[in-house]
Image 1 (tube, rainbow, N blue to C red):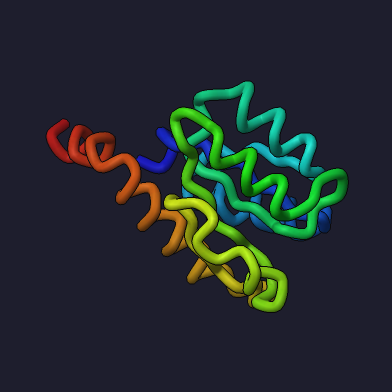
Image 2 (cartoon, helix red, strand yellow):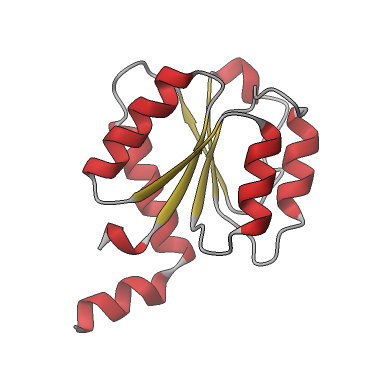
Length: 134
């Protein structure tokens, strides 16, 4: 089922990006990576096949509020999971209606995986329903 979904993972840390890619790929998702804010925006606005963005708010080449505002302009909207430390997120709550927050917890990403699945189900219910009928 997850192979039907493409996730863009962005993080300032190369090791975190690779770790998340490995873990999410093992769950069956297609995963793309972005290391800078500019790369995130390029992928988000040039590839409609993206289904979800995992966003680190502390990316090079863009300010947090700027990227959040630009993401809000995408049609159709893309669900975003903000994946950062709590102190980085407190000023940005509620900027996008399709936003979830998961605090970074080292190597345990079970909560992140659960939130990703929940947000995908909430955003794309028909894609899940059509799979059950097959």
